[in-house]
Image (tube, rainbow, N blue to C red):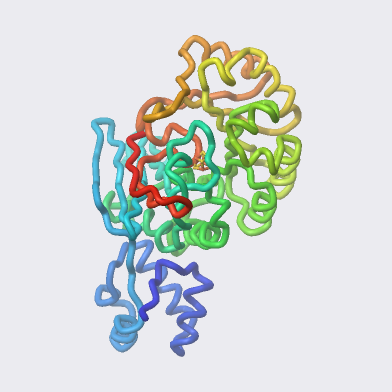
Length: 367
Ligand code: SF4
């Protein structure tokens, strides 16, 4: 069986090359060829000895998920629907902002990445949650989304980079797929791969507290938390994982997370649901809940989907809510409607999932 090299970070590749009897620097060379130059085969790795290329061709491969659909919207947002086998598909979305030739200050290219086929956490407002859960994506399927996007966007080589930011906010709960996600994060941060600083990589979680603590130790990238309610009764209904890790426990984990990286802040995502969590009293309760915690809020318009009973809060209500947070000194942004599918909490991208928990067939959601 061949080994997919996209499944490995630098350490894993070094182990693989050691098993082949090769020197560790060869692993770095190959890591660089795959992720910096976007190599899709070994024949193109001309800086490696011919004998090594031949050997790799026999025992290894570079295999990203297949592209089912590739769409570009008029505002430059680009979406890929990716085949992850057995009838499952996940989506990656790229959102460019500014002029790529204009330097790092003028340009931001964000890729929103999926980490699971479906999601088991069943948040009430989430289209992915309603599809059920099939399986965790492998590291190759996660990092393969960067690899594919980088190649498609011409981001390989020495010119300006296409991808400057990554958010793990696509389909799935990243921290429920901890090991594969952390290996992929290490590749994202590696100077021989995507060279992203840890503040430009954001993991978005619904609040699996032990995994937040583990992430702080393993790879403390930026953390976003899907909050959506300021008190337990409401959050129990909207984000069921809250019954296991209630707000006090979650907020304590956020404070511990920042102890590892004191100059950082937590981003709280808050989907604005008309008449559910959008009253002035909710905003004031959020101010009290997060007092003393360096944080900012992303207020998100709800993306309606078939069968959902929720409605998005009216614009005026959202502004009133935002004002209360801002007046309390909390930065609160409204996500723009551009690239609407990623203007959501974790996991609201389209895709299709063969639900392993039930016998329903493939469901398709158009978020
Ligand atoms: S919001 Fe995130 S954690 Fe909740 S069901 Fe959707 S994908 Fe899963």
